[in-house]
Structure formats: structure tokens, C-alpha cells
Amino acid sequence: MTLQERDKKHIWHPLTQHKLHPEAIAIKRAKGCILYDEDGNEYIDAIASWYTCMYGHCNEYVTSRVMEQMQTLDQVVFSGFTHEPAVRLSEELIKILPDNQNKIFFSDNGSSSVEIGIKMALQYHFNNGNKRNTLIAFEDGFHGDTFGAMSVSSLSVYNGPFEDFFLDVKRIPVPNGTNDDVILETLQAILENNEVAGFVYEPLVQGAAAMKMHDAKGLDKILKFCKAHDIITVADEVMTGFGKTGRHFASLHMEQKPDVICLSKALTAGLLPMAITSCSQDIYDAFYSDDIGKGLFHGHTYSANPLACTAALAGIELLQSEAIQDNIERITASHQTFNERIKNHPKVKSTRQTGVIFALDLNIEMERYGNLRDKLFGFFMENGLFLRPLGSTIYIQAPYVITKEQLERIYAVIEEALDIV
Image (cartoon, rainbow, N blue to C red; front, side, top):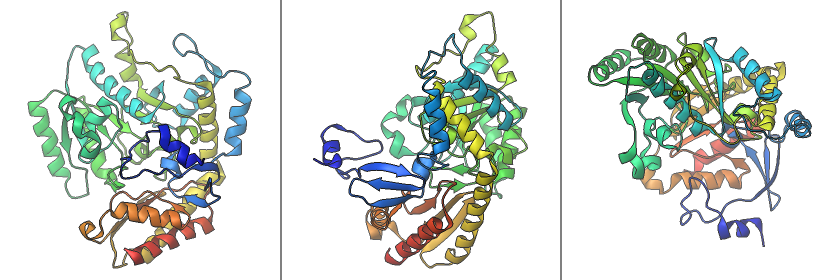
């Protein structure tokens, strides 16, 4: 019996309607930018497996470090204990995070990192005797699948059955370079009628919203407004973090720095699950008290797992290496060249890019093409390319170690797809 057949017996996959998609492709191994299925087919992983394996699959620098660590300390409770990988990771992260960040809180997935950021924002005001119960978030945002993270998200396909149970959230449009005044007026109106605790946002790129990108200067104005009104700013960098926007973190593109930053995905180089919520000293100080009730009572069994911390340390070293930085510049320039040759294609409605993230929208009526996303996905896989279109949007976010030839193959297959839709 094949892996695919065995899978169907017991497994319930994420983000899957199994009646419509009964088969899961069985991947046997991966190396660098290539996935290999059980039939021996090869696929270029053009989205780094949901933006995690940014230094390539089974990167030997990362795996060797983790293998060495697992001979010494594999797991230990992080409440009341500490260990070298966690301490060193905190030190190394603080060096590359925005300079107002000073404390690191560990968890084990991106949704939880946002959940913790929301808790920090709400409890910050509560601990200071100024209870606030409203959050602000962008339209079309996505922040995860736990209840707080869903509350600040606004993609109904994920949230529909649960919306009656959400936190109070007011939404604003993303800044596009022309609507700054309208957004600031909207923020002022929200403040006049609500006690606002925090603003939760994806900086510069909204991933699940089909890589929707927005204006850094406009976002800076929003952050400045929030700081002037003691609204805690929570940057969800689960997707954008660790080099994807051309800087180590998207928040470094703005002058105003967030109070809280949420990290996961590429944090551990795609090897192990872990998340981090960092914050400023000011946020931490609101929880530092003789009153035990003012502590942040949130914890995960595998918080700061030593193996995950070791993988993250190796990933940070790779991120800062000359080779990876050169690759980021190379990929960015390559996307720009591809954009010049594709942007005027009759099937392309628009294109956009931030760092190594490239997206194009198809200039077609989706109703005429049925389930366009599935047709495109099938075409890409048949041609040895793992891409997951978001509706009528095709995007690329490949590992930093991708070769010039592999990138050209991605571009060529996308161009072939345009000719058949």
C-alpha cells in the first residue's frame, strides 16, 4: 500500500476539504530546494514549504548543529529552568531585532506568538489600571488559527463559524501611498468611541491576502499615531521575518518600531516548530510586580526546546552570512528582471515585489475558469514546481539557496501557465 493510500485512512489535513481533495502527495525526502515524492518525481519548492525552509531542506549546517545538541540536552521544562541554547538565542536575536526590543517569550507556533502578543497588549493596560478592550487590525489580515489570532484576522473562509466568539476588533485599510489622511481620520474616529489596547498588523506584506503589499511611509504614520495614544503595536512577522523583505525584519523598513514582534516559520530554518514573541522593556515592566496576578500566565510544554533553539541559532548565523545576503540580493534582482518581461503579458493584471517575495495577479474572470487555483496547482506540480496559488494570485517565495537555473525554471513554468489559462 502506498503512503498516499495509507494517509487516506486516518489523517485529517490542514486547510483541506477532503471531499474535494481526497489525495495528498506523498513526499519521501527533500534536499536543498527539491522535494521528492514516493514515485520519484521531483518538485522545486518555490514557496520554501510555507516560508520556513529559507536555507534549503535538510541544510547540513543546521542539522549537524541540532544533532550535536540532542546528545547533550533534548528537552527540559522552561518554567523555572533555563539552558544555553535559549539564553544564547535570546542574545543573538536581540542583536538583529529592532533596537527597542529587549525581552524574548518562547512558544511553539505562529498563531500562539500572535496570541501572546495580543495578551501582552491587553494585559499591559490592565496591569497599569487602564482596562482597554478593543484592538485595531488591517482589512484582509491573517494572523493565525487560535481565537485571538482569528479575531484580528479578517479572511472569512478561515473564521466564519467562530466570529460570534471573537474579541472586539476595528479594521482599517492598508496604506497605499494615497490614503494616509483617510486612515488617520478613521483611527481618530475609532479612538473617540472605543478603548483601544493594541494594533496588530503584518508589516509591508499580507501573506494570506495573496501577498498584498502596502506602503512603508504610510505604515510609519499609523505606528506614530498609535504610539502617541499609548496603543501597543504588535508586528506579526511570522511570515516576513528573517530576510524576506530585503532586511532581517520588515519592521526595520520603518522609523517607528513596534512594541511587540511575533516570529516563527523561518525562525528555526524550517527544521523544528518554535515561535517567539519579543517586546520592549516598557512592555515587560508592566508585568514585573510583587503581585503574582500581574504575571504573563501563558506557557507551552515545549517552550524554548533546546533543539529548536539550536536550529534557530544556526539559521541566524546563515542569515547573516555573506553567501545568504548575496543570494537575497541575487533573487531580488532576478525577480525584478522577470517582472520586466512578464508585467505586460495580456493575462497579467498586476505585479508586485518586496525583497524575495514576488506576486502577480491574473487578468482573467475566475468564474469562467471554475476552480482556477486547483487547475494552476495541478499544472505546476505536473511541471515539477511546488507553488500554491492564492485564488488568481501566483507568488514566489523560494529558499535563499535556490540556483539561477531553478529560478529560471520557476519563471518559465509560470509563463507556460499563463498561456493555458
